[in-house]
Amino acid sequence: MIFSRPWRTAAVTAAALLSGLSVGQTWSSCNPLYGTCPANQALGMTVNVDFTKGQVGSFVASGGTPTYNRDGVSFTVARSGDAPQLASIFYIMFGRVEVTMKAAPGAGIVSSLVLLSDTLDEIDLEWIGADSSTVQTNYFSKGAASGYNRGEFNPAPNNQNEWITYTIDWTADRIIWYVGKTVVRTVRYNDADGQYPQTPMQVKFGAWSGGDYSNPPGTIEWAKGPTDYSKGPFSMLVKSAVITDYSTGKTYSYGDNSGTWQSIRSDGGKINGNLGGAAAITVTASAAPAATDAGSPTIPVGGIGKGQTTAGAGAATTWGPLPDGWRITSDGKVRPVGSSTVNSPSRFCLLGSFLSFLLFTR
Image 1: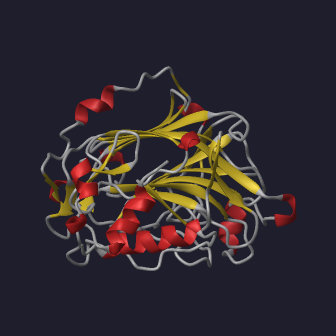
Image 2: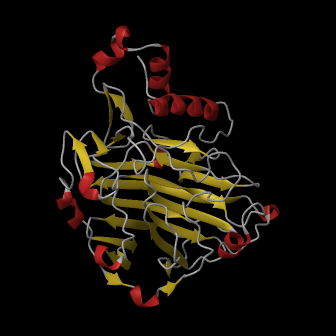
Image 3: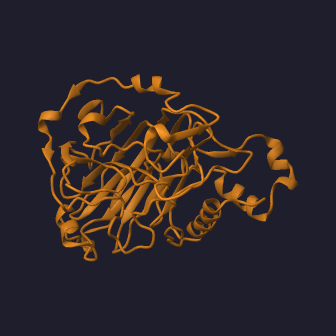
């Protein structure tokens, strides 16, 4: 069986992680604004991932080695260059991402939850380790950071010691950020000044040192650094993630180079085919008056590890569709469609067998 390059890279990366090595991404992404790119694996449903039960095949590590225990998955920054993260192999085309977590402490340490597309559309939640009372919300379109006027610091009290569920709810019309069941910010398409994210997104989360000496002075200042590694290690903890795709289908592809959501095509489904799932959150309060404008040129684009010298940190990862005969399950694992897939030697080459071992989660 011949696997596409992202799957070959995933196998190599996972193998290195199993042997205790830290490996960054070793290939560059394909930006659909400038050419024809492979289709992306669509989620097309809801997954509920319990990281207290260990790793799952639908998320791949880079920038370091996340560790798993009864609290979930831990992203630890202990030294310069550490930027451990998990990135989904699937994309959502509008959707909702709910992550239950504790942010990492420490001056200069940043915990990040990022939705990022191949065109560099982006939606962020970021926690600064020197401030345990707020979370930064931000968004970008096509990687453009001009103006630096889209960031806000929103209330998120006791975020380093308390398990809190943070939600990004994203449709063609608006983005809503929640802390618990409280709306802290809403941005509507018509108010985004042409900078609205609207292409299929990966889900990425992890920790990094914005206060590292290797970063630009503006980034260090934004992260309230510099980072004193002697006071670490510093860990972000993620217990679980519930991710809902508001579109359906097997893959998402770009019909042209415009980067508009109307140009996105679904194979075997429909864009906005699951939009009814957007009504699932119950709002209890609004904390919008407490938000503060972060308007500053020190806000980095790209979320996790942007500006780091570690190979691959902060890069956009482009994933192609799963090989035939594989699927993502509702708990986020990657499984063969049926037992006959496993029992048929003709369907697997050596690499395929190796990948099946890596992706079968205990």
